[in-house]
Image (cartoon, rainbow, N blue to C red; front, side, top):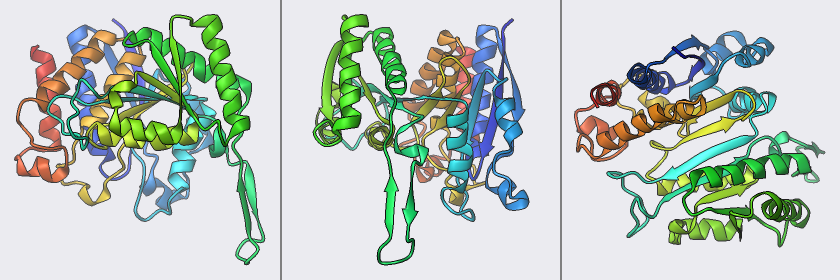
Length: 359
Protein backbone atom coordinates (compact mmCIF):
# COMPACT_ATOMS: atom_id res chain seq x y z
CA UNK A 1 0.00 0.00 0.00
CA UNK A 2 1.38 3.38 -1.01
CA UNK A 3 2.12 5.83 1.80
CA UNK A 4 2.85 9.52 1.18
CA UNK A 5 4.65 11.81 3.60
CA UNK A 6 3.28 15.34 4.01
CA UNK A 7 4.67 18.27 6.00
CA UNK A 8 1.86 20.27 7.60
CA UNK A 9 2.30 24.01 8.18
CA UNK A 10 -1.00 25.10 9.76
CA UNK A 11 0.31 28.63 10.31
CA UNK A 12 -1.66 31.53 11.76
CA UNK A 13 -5.21 32.53 12.63
CA UNK A 14 -7.76 30.14 11.17
CA UNK A 15 -5.05 28.20 9.32
CA UNK A 16 -5.01 25.31 11.82
CA UNK A 17 -8.81 25.06 11.66
CA UNK A 18 -9.03 24.74 7.89
CA UNK A 19 -6.01 22.47 7.77
CA UNK A 20 -7.64 20.03 10.19
CA UNK A 21 -10.51 19.64 7.72
CA UNK A 22 -8.17 19.36 4.76
CA UNK A 23 -6.30 16.51 6.45
CA UNK A 24 -9.61 14.87 7.39
CA UNK A 25 -10.65 14.84 3.73
CA UNK A 26 -7.24 13.63 2.52
CA UNK A 27 -7.44 10.70 4.92
CA UNK A 28 -11.00 9.87 3.86
CA UNK A 29 -9.99 9.79 0.19
CA UNK A 30 -6.87 7.78 0.95
CA UNK A 31 -8.90 5.19 2.85
CA UNK A 32 -11.36 5.01 -0.02
CA UNK A 33 -8.68 4.30 -2.61
CA UNK A 34 -6.33 2.10 -0.60
CA UNK A 35 -3.34 4.22 0.36
CA UNK A 36 -2.37 6.43 3.30
CA UNK A 37 -0.58 9.57 4.47
CA UNK A 38 1.91 10.23 7.23
CA UNK A 39 2.16 13.77 8.58
CA UNK A 40 4.78 15.90 10.31
CA UNK A 41 3.52 19.11 11.91
CA UNK A 42 5.54 22.36 11.86
CA UNK A 43 4.62 25.37 14.00
CA UNK A 44 6.12 28.08 11.75
CA UNK A 45 4.14 31.30 11.89
CA UNK A 46 3.45 34.40 13.93
CA UNK A 47 3.23 32.84 17.39
CA UNK A 48 6.57 31.08 17.06
CA UNK A 49 8.19 34.21 15.65
CA UNK A 50 6.98 36.36 18.56
CA UNK A 51 8.22 33.81 21.11
CA UNK A 52 11.59 32.95 19.58
CA UNK A 53 12.37 35.56 16.90
CA UNK A 54 12.76 32.68 14.46
CA UNK A 55 10.85 32.69 11.17
CA UNK A 56 12.12 29.59 9.36
CA UNK A 57 15.30 27.80 10.47
CA UNK A 58 17.73 26.56 7.84
CA UNK A 59 17.12 23.00 8.99
CA UNK A 60 13.46 23.23 7.97
CA UNK A 61 14.26 23.64 4.28
CA UNK A 62 16.41 20.51 4.34
CA UNK A 63 13.66 18.61 6.16
CA UNK A 64 11.05 19.79 3.65
CA UNK A 65 13.06 18.22 0.82
CA UNK A 66 12.37 14.75 2.26
CA UNK A 67 8.57 14.96 2.01
CA UNK A 68 6.30 14.08 -0.88
CA UNK A 69 4.45 17.38 -0.45
CA UNK A 70 3.95 20.40 1.82
CA UNK A 71 0.46 21.48 2.95
CA UNK A 72 -0.03 25.03 4.21
CA UNK A 73 -2.94 26.51 6.18
CA UNK A 74 -2.39 30.28 6.25
CA UNK A 75 0.36 32.77 7.01
CA UNK A 76 -0.22 36.23 8.51
CA UNK A 77 -0.39 37.49 12.09
CA UNK A 78 -1.88 40.85 13.14
CA UNK A 79 0.96 41.50 15.61
CA UNK A 80 3.75 40.80 13.11
CA UNK A 81 4.67 43.45 10.54
CA UNK A 82 3.60 42.58 6.98
CA UNK A 83 6.32 40.92 4.94
CA UNK A 84 8.25 39.24 7.75
CA UNK A 85 6.35 35.95 7.69
CA UNK A 86 5.38 36.10 4.03
CA UNK A 87 8.96 36.60 2.84
CA UNK A 88 10.54 34.49 5.55
CA UNK A 89 8.29 31.46 5.15
CA UNK A 90 6.39 31.53 1.86
CA UNK A 91 8.90 33.16 -0.47
CA UNK A 92 11.89 31.48 1.09
CA UNK A 93 10.28 28.06 0.77
CA UNK A 94 9.28 28.72 -2.84
CA UNK A 95 12.73 29.98 -3.80
CA UNK A 96 14.90 27.48 -1.92
CA UNK A 97 12.82 24.47 -3.00
CA UNK A 98 12.76 25.93 -6.51
CA UNK A 99 8.97 25.82 -6.74
CA UNK A 100 9.07 27.62 -10.04
CA UNK A 101 5.45 27.03 -11.05
CA UNK A 102 2.44 28.58 -9.34
CA UNK A 103 -0.62 26.66 -10.50
CA UNK A 104 -4.00 28.33 -10.06
CA UNK A 105 -7.19 26.68 -11.31
CA UNK A 106 -9.92 29.28 -11.86
CA UNK A 107 -13.12 27.25 -11.83
CA UNK A 108 -16.64 28.29 -10.93
CA UNK A 109 -18.42 25.39 -9.29
CA UNK A 110 -22.18 24.78 -9.32
CA UNK A 111 -23.82 26.35 -6.31
CA UNK A 112 -21.28 29.17 -6.09
CA UNK A 113 -22.10 32.76 -7.05
CA UNK A 114 -19.86 34.83 -9.31
CA UNK A 115 -19.97 38.63 -9.46
CA UNK A 116 -19.94 38.42 -13.27
CA UNK A 117 -23.44 38.82 -14.66
CA UNK A 118 -24.81 36.02 -16.84
CA UNK A 119 -21.78 33.74 -16.45
CA UNK A 120 -21.91 30.23 -15.07
CA UNK A 121 -19.69 27.18 -14.50
CA UNK A 122 -19.56 26.48 -18.23
CA UNK A 123 -17.94 29.91 -18.78
CA UNK A 124 -15.38 30.07 -15.97
CA UNK A 125 -13.00 27.14 -16.15
CA UNK A 126 -9.37 27.92 -16.92
CA UNK A 127 -5.90 27.63 -15.41
CA UNK A 128 -3.31 30.32 -14.75
CA UNK A 129 0.32 29.22 -14.67
CA UNK A 130 2.47 31.85 -13.00
CA UNK A 131 6.26 31.77 -13.08
CA UNK A 132 7.06 31.59 -9.39
CA UNK A 133 10.79 32.01 -8.81
CA UNK A 134 12.06 35.10 -10.62
CA UNK A 135 10.86 38.57 -11.72
CA UNK A 136 10.69 41.51 -9.29
CA UNK A 137 10.17 39.18 -6.33
CA UNK A 138 13.84 38.24 -6.12
CA UNK A 139 14.51 41.71 -4.65
CA UNK A 140 17.16 42.90 -7.07
CA UNK A 141 17.48 46.65 -6.52
CA UNK A 142 17.79 48.95 -3.54
CA UNK A 143 17.16 52.35 -1.97
CA UNK A 144 19.40 55.40 -1.91
CA UNK A 145 19.06 58.48 0.33
CA UNK A 146 16.13 56.88 2.14
CA UNK A 147 13.91 59.31 4.02
CA UNK A 148 15.11 62.37 2.16
CA UNK A 149 13.31 64.34 -0.57
CA UNK A 150 15.82 62.81 -3.00
CA UNK A 151 15.11 59.17 -2.17
CA UNK A 152 15.50 56.73 -5.04
CA UNK A 153 13.96 53.25 -4.97
CA UNK A 154 14.61 50.57 -7.58
CA UNK A 155 13.41 47.00 -7.95
CA UNK A 156 14.28 45.19 -11.16
CA UNK A 157 12.44 42.58 -13.24
CA UNK A 158 14.96 39.94 -14.29
CA UNK A 159 14.44 36.69 -16.20
CA UNK A 160 16.85 34.17 -17.67
CA UNK A 161 15.99 32.15 -20.77
CA UNK A 162 16.11 28.98 -18.67
CA UNK A 163 13.55 30.35 -16.21
CA UNK A 164 11.23 31.33 -19.04
CA UNK A 165 11.66 28.06 -20.94
CA UNK A 166 10.91 25.75 -18.04
CA UNK A 167 7.76 27.67 -17.14
CA UNK A 168 6.57 27.67 -20.75
CA UNK A 169 7.26 23.96 -21.16
CA UNK A 170 5.18 23.17 -18.10
CA UNK A 171 2.37 25.37 -19.47
CA UNK A 172 2.39 23.71 -22.88
CA UNK A 173 2.38 20.26 -21.30
CA UNK A 174 -0.43 21.28 -18.95
CA UNK A 175 -2.50 22.53 -21.90
CA UNK A 176 -1.99 19.25 -23.74
CA UNK A 177 -2.83 17.14 -20.69
CA UNK A 178 -5.90 19.23 -19.88
CA UNK A 179 -7.13 18.63 -23.44
CA UNK A 180 -9.93 21.19 -23.27
CA UNK A 181 -9.47 23.81 -26.01
CA UNK A 182 -5.75 23.11 -26.57
CA UNK A 183 -5.11 26.85 -26.37
CA UNK A 184 -2.29 28.50 -24.41
CA UNK A 185 -2.38 32.27 -23.92
CA UNK A 186 0.77 34.19 -23.03
CA UNK A 187 -0.07 37.18 -20.83
CA UNK A 188 2.56 39.92 -20.95
CA UNK A 189 3.27 43.55 -21.79
CA UNK A 190 5.40 43.48 -24.92
CA UNK A 191 4.55 47.06 -25.88
CA UNK A 192 6.23 48.51 -22.76
CA UNK A 193 8.34 45.80 -21.11
CA UNK A 194 9.96 45.07 -24.43
CA UNK A 195 13.10 43.37 -23.14
CA UNK A 196 11.56 40.96 -20.64
CA UNK A 197 8.38 40.11 -22.49
CA UNK A 198 10.16 40.21 -25.80
CA UNK A 199 12.12 37.25 -24.43
CA UNK A 200 8.93 35.55 -23.21
CA UNK A 201 7.21 36.01 -26.58
CA UNK A 202 10.14 34.74 -28.64
CA UNK A 203 10.57 31.69 -26.42
CA UNK A 204 6.81 31.06 -26.46
CA UNK A 205 6.58 30.86 -30.24
CA UNK A 206 9.87 29.03 -30.73
CA UNK A 207 8.90 26.29 -28.29
CA UNK A 208 5.36 26.07 -29.59
CA UNK A 209 6.44 25.69 -33.21
CA UNK A 210 9.12 23.10 -32.50
CA UNK A 211 7.65 21.01 -29.68
CA UNK A 212 3.92 21.67 -29.39
CA UNK A 213 2.45 22.23 -32.86
CA UNK A 214 -0.88 20.82 -31.66
CA UNK A 215 -1.32 23.69 -29.17
CA UNK A 216 -2.88 26.94 -30.40
CA UNK A 217 -0.88 29.96 -29.23
CA UNK A 218 -2.42 33.31 -28.33
CA UNK A 219 -1.00 36.49 -26.79
CA UNK A 220 -2.71 39.14 -24.63
CA UNK A 221 -1.38 42.20 -22.82
CA UNK A 222 -1.95 41.95 -19.08
CA UNK A 223 -4.41 44.87 -19.04
CA UNK A 224 -6.45 43.24 -21.81
CA UNK A 225 -6.29 39.94 -19.93
CA UNK A 226 -7.92 41.49 -16.87
CA UNK A 227 -10.69 42.97 -19.01
CA UNK A 228 -11.39 39.71 -20.82
CA UNK A 229 -11.34 37.69 -17.60
CA UNK A 230 -14.34 39.76 -16.55
CA UNK A 231 -16.07 40.19 -19.92
CA UNK A 232 -15.34 36.86 -21.61
CA UNK A 233 -13.73 34.37 -19.20
CA UNK A 234 -14.83 31.55 -21.49
CA UNK A 235 -12.12 32.65 -23.95
CA UNK A 236 -9.38 31.22 -21.74
CA UNK A 237 -8.12 27.64 -21.46
CA UNK A 238 -4.60 27.96 -20.00
CA UNK A 239 -2.84 31.27 -19.34
CA UNK A 240 0.91 31.51 -18.70
CA UNK A 241 2.56 34.64 -17.35
CA UNK A 242 5.34 36.11 -15.24
CA UNK A 243 5.50 36.30 -11.48
CA UNK A 244 4.17 39.82 -10.89
CA UNK A 245 1.39 39.76 -13.47
CA UNK A 246 0.43 36.29 -12.28
CA UNK A 247 0.16 37.51 -8.71
CA UNK A 248 -2.38 40.11 -9.83
CA UNK A 249 -4.52 38.19 -12.28
CA UNK A 250 -4.86 35.12 -10.05
CA UNK A 251 -6.52 37.24 -7.36
CA UNK A 252 -8.94 38.49 -10.00
CA UNK A 253 -9.44 34.85 -10.94
CA UNK A 254 -10.29 34.00 -7.35
CA UNK A 255 -12.97 36.67 -7.30
CA UNK A 256 -14.67 35.54 -10.50
CA UNK A 257 -14.75 31.93 -9.28
CA UNK A 258 -16.56 32.95 -6.11
CA UNK A 259 -13.98 34.47 -3.79
CA UNK A 260 -10.91 33.69 -1.74
CA UNK A 261 -12.90 31.16 0.30
CA UNK A 262 -12.85 28.64 -2.52
CA UNK A 263 -9.61 29.38 -4.39
CA UNK A 264 -6.61 27.09 -3.98
CA UNK A 265 -3.14 27.03 -5.46
CA UNK A 266 -0.01 24.97 -5.80
CA UNK A 267 3.64 26.05 -5.71
CA UNK A 268 5.23 23.35 -7.79
CA UNK A 269 8.64 21.95 -8.40
CA UNK A 270 7.74 19.25 -10.94
CA UNK A 271 11.07 17.55 -10.25
CA UNK A 272 11.03 18.06 -6.47
CA UNK A 273 8.76 18.96 -3.55
CA UNK A 274 5.64 21.07 -4.05
CA UNK A 275 3.52 23.10 -1.61
CA UNK A 276 -0.26 23.52 -1.66
CA UNK A 277 -2.32 26.23 0.01
CA UNK A 278 -5.64 28.05 0.13
CA UNK A 279 -5.41 31.49 -1.49
CA UNK A 280 -7.18 33.36 1.31
CA UNK A 281 -5.46 34.79 4.37
CA UNK A 282 -5.42 33.78 8.01
CA UNK A 283 -8.66 35.65 8.91
CA UNK A 284 -7.52 36.27 12.52
CA UNK A 285 -10.83 37.79 13.65
CA UNK A 286 -12.51 34.40 13.18
CA UNK A 287 -9.84 32.39 14.99
CA UNK A 288 -11.31 29.71 17.23
CA UNK A 289 -14.91 30.44 16.26
CA UNK A 290 -15.25 27.31 14.08
CA UNK A 291 -17.14 29.18 11.36
CA UNK A 292 -14.46 29.75 8.73
CA UNK A 293 -14.99 28.13 5.35
CA UNK A 294 -12.46 25.27 4.84
CA UNK A 295 -13.25 24.60 1.18
CA UNK A 296 -10.22 26.42 -0.25
CA UNK A 297 -7.91 24.34 1.94
CA UNK A 298 -9.77 21.17 0.95
CA UNK A 299 -9.39 22.06 -2.73
CA UNK A 300 -5.67 22.64 -2.08
CA UNK A 301 -5.60 19.12 -0.68
CA UNK A 302 -7.25 17.90 -3.87
CA UNK A 303 -4.39 19.47 -5.84
CA UNK A 304 -1.89 17.82 -3.51
CA UNK A 305 -3.58 14.48 -4.09
CA UNK A 306 -3.28 14.88 -7.85
CA UNK A 307 0.38 15.90 -7.62
CA UNK A 308 1.45 12.86 -5.58
CA UNK A 309 -0.08 10.63 -8.26
CA UNK A 310 -3.58 9.79 -7.05
CA UNK A 311 -5.86 11.37 -9.68
CA UNK A 312 -8.89 9.20 -8.89
CA UNK A 313 -8.82 10.27 -5.26
CA UNK A 314 -8.41 13.90 -6.34
CA UNK A 315 -11.50 13.66 -8.56
CA UNK A 316 -13.47 12.12 -5.69
CA UNK A 317 -12.57 15.07 -3.43
CA UNK A 318 -13.76 17.48 -6.11
CA UNK A 319 -16.97 15.48 -6.56
CA UNK A 320 -17.61 15.58 -2.82
CA UNK A 321 -17.03 19.34 -2.65
CA UNK A 322 -19.42 19.94 -5.55
CA UNK A 323 -22.00 17.73 -3.86
CA UNK A 324 -21.69 19.84 -0.73
CA UNK A 325 -21.91 23.12 -2.63
CA UNK A 326 -25.10 22.01 -4.39
CA UNK A 327 -26.65 20.41 -1.32
CA UNK A 328 -28.22 23.60 0.02
CA UNK A 329 -26.37 23.30 3.32
CA UNK A 330 -25.01 26.85 3.01
CA UNK A 331 -26.16 29.88 1.02
CA UNK A 332 -22.71 31.47 0.63
CA UNK A 333 -19.05 30.97 1.42
CA UNK A 334 -18.42 33.61 4.11
CA UNK A 335 -18.10 32.96 7.81
CA UNK A 336 -21.40 34.76 8.38
CA UNK A 337 -23.09 32.53 5.78
CA UNK A 338 -21.78 29.42 7.51
CA UNK A 339 -22.89 30.67 10.91
CA UNK A 340 -26.34 31.64 9.59
CA UNK A 341 -26.79 28.15 8.17
CA UNK A 342 -26.00 26.58 11.52
CA UNK A 343 -22.91 24.94 10.04
CA UNK A 344 -19.34 24.91 11.34
CA UNK A 345 -15.89 24.49 9.88
CA UNK A 346 -15.76 21.03 11.41
CA UNK A 347 -19.20 20.06 10.12
CA UNK A 348 -18.26 20.97 6.54
CA UNK A 349 -15.18 18.76 6.71
CA UNK A 350 -17.26 15.96 8.24
CA UNK A 351 -19.90 16.24 5.48
CA UNK A 352 -17.32 16.02 2.69
CA UNK A 353 -15.34 13.19 4.31
CA UNK A 354 -18.56 11.26 4.91
CA UNK A 355 -19.62 11.72 1.29
CA UNK A 356 -16.29 10.31 0.11
CA UNK A 357 -16.61 7.30 2.40
CA UNK A 358 -20.14 6.48 1.22
CA UNK A 359 -19.93 7.21 -2.52
